[in-house]
Amino acid sequence: MTLQPRLQAALEAAFQPTNLEIVNESNLHAGHNPEAAATNDTHYRIRISAASLAGKSRVTQHREINAALKFAFDEGLHALAIEVTPSN
Image (cartoon, rainbow, N blue to C red; front, side, top):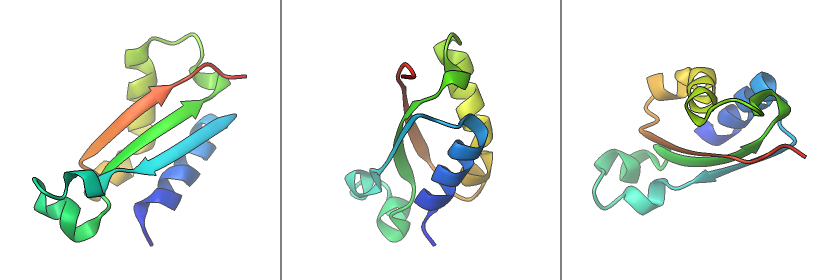
């Protein structure tokens, strides 16, 4: 199983987002990162809207998201781009 469905499940459980998009960008890094080429599961971008993140600083939002995805970093996630947008 790829990491993407597990990222989605963890983020949905932690934040109950109104919008969540997860993009695997590992293929964009294969030229300079052999692990990205081998696993295609090392670089992700998330776009998330959640009331539970509203009103918090960007640093706090990112810390909370990174904490929710600690398992993924422990398993080889190398980079995570985070975009938090206002919740509808």
